[in-house]
Image 1 (tube, rainbow, N blue to C red):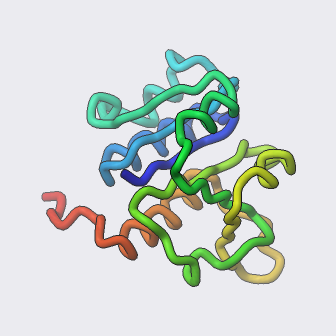
Image 2 (cartoon, rainbow, N blue to C red):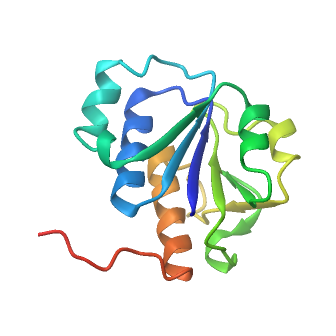
Length: 155
């Protein structure tokens, strides 16, 4: 199963949005602590609405515990700059898409642990996308490539 992973999330609204995305696309959301907010935070609850029961999520206390849990799966770092374009990358159904904290992105020691690094090409002068939007864009392409996109339209 494809997964989204969020390293040291800082903003509850982004994390709630990614939980909603995970629920809608049938993927797991792996949160890697420490989290910058409490799971009971009202903005987190408001962002994920009532999708939490539909989502599969795990909270890992540390990156090391996450890394151990995903042994055997390919972890792909999503970077604001550098790496291959996500549109030219070949995804696998068991991939884990790793997002970094909103304020800093993934630290170099984490980037150096993963084998693959991708980015979303943007117009010159554009610095970065919101992490939840970036994760959604890449997840949709990965699921499309692997023929894992849901086929039932929402009424």
